[in-house]
Image (cartoon, rainbow, N blue to C red):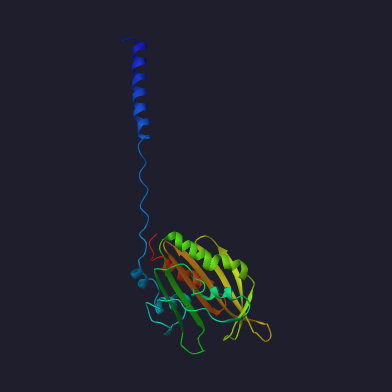
Length: 235
């Protein structure tokens, strides 16, 4: 075989190899992984954290719960607001006035060191299971994220309460909303050290809520509670 014939043969072989390599890029892409399974009504009973788990996060010993686990299974009615915008009551926790989305299951609970006025921490935790992830994001937006704009900086007073509350909007996204509620004495308007750090998060088909009230900033504890509950949710 002449030198030219050998070169032509080698080039032809290279073309065959190149064509073979190119054919792998034309293979059908792998199908995307299936979405995580959504949570059913019965799954809600395992979402809330125990008093010991909450105490470990907040740094105290909780001896009292307004409802032992798995917690309340129906939403409470809103408190009566006699000063300020009643819609801002949403930021104390989900209730029948703010949760308009049909839910599959609800679990909620409040814990404190004791059931007297001597407690130094009060924690509300809640989980709302809805039909699908889209409904969870919509519920987060409608119940918390959208109203936060109108209530940012607003003061309210509850008919049965002793303090005036002011809300401050934090970070907002389509899956997470954070805010702080601070207090002042109604007679003098002087701020107190008592406040509530709060967070709500949509994960899969669940909206998780945590509110930590204490002297100082309870926001880090609220985030840690939401993180721990969210870890139980697929996705």
